[in-house]
Length: 493
Ligand SMILES: C[S@@+](CC[C@H](N)C(=O)[O-])C[C@H]1O[C@@H](n2cnc3c(N)ncnc32)[C@H](O)[C@@H]1O
Image (tube, rainbow, N blue to C red; front, side, top):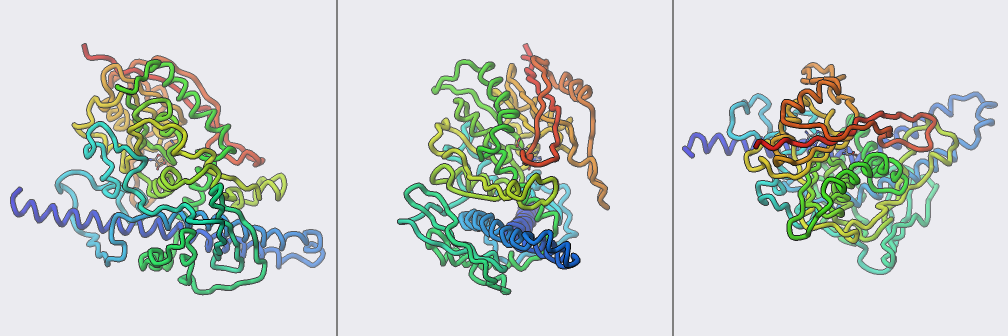
């Protein structure tokens, strides 16, 4: 490489890293500010309640108690989030000052590893997870689950111990970490106001592993100070719902609707799965990783691909740091007062993960690979490398669905199969920002035409009725009539 190219390369990497840090700070900040944002909602409910005339208040006299109960549930959710963040080892020096020259021209710079959506609002990851990228590991992905993402182990380090976590507001919850069954139990709740107006104060001082020094990180303090847009807070709440879908007993019904037919199809198509030469399966848009894990348990070399840091931080924690099934508790349904049959429905706790990922019999070669699907897999090294590609609720996340299909076809071996399940609720269909985002929105009929062009032959097609991260006890249920198909890539010969 000539010196000019080298300089350009270095500048590019610096810029790329700066953008990664900026984006990661914003996501961590959203997680850290989860409880404050939830508390803000509770304050709003209380404000409305205070406006009620006296006699109406008397009719609803239980509501102040409900608000306190909400606060305690927020503390429990926060407890999980804080533990997850403690276990997260950022790949960069997050405390470094970053200076991004917004006008720097990154077009035409070597290679295309920069995430296509890098912008101020970027939540996606690109370079960070490159350590897991397939090219780094040949076609045999890393042998541990999500290797390299998290360094710290969270498992309790002794007998049952009490930990205190403050939501940073007016409620404190005491948890017991029980080493005998590795569970977390809420043992005391202080209803007294414990006002902690300083958001910087010791949220991280009470690590269950007792490791305080590593937790007092400047970048965490900085992230706490960042103001968080509501849309980011919403993403954290979505993750909580995704935890139910992928990792709780309460999500079993949805998993049976979506994942089970896919697993049965893989089982039918690959009846022989010998350990010596296992078939390989790629799962783009893997979310929190349950489907990729189930595919691994079937005896495939399974690789999930995911580009959201929100998802990757959480899936890494669940996959790598879980000590036992049902170790954690969350209250996923507290964020909406709408469509509730009863308050108790809203206050349902959910234990997770329903299984201990490390003990369920995953096959060698299970991995999660971070980055944008097209960027990572539209690579010569990836050509004709996979026996199967499984997309579940993923196709419609594309700016350009044709490009997704082109890459799926490219990475499949001749005779390889593409199993898809999902709707066509194009994610960018409603993005009317100042910078209009590209969004190709085509019908299923056209999707099939495009698939034909890329050498696919339709083998099986069904409609599957399903929900997606739905609260089963809500009066409102969105049902999809999802397209489910298997297509085979024609052999060239
Ligand atoms: C609707 S969710 C489905 C998740 C999971 N497959 C499931 O069924 O629960 C779509 C997922 O695709 C991820 N995603 C979207 N665009 C992506 C891209 N270009 N590359 C990799 N992942 C992407 C999102 O971050 C999200 O986790």
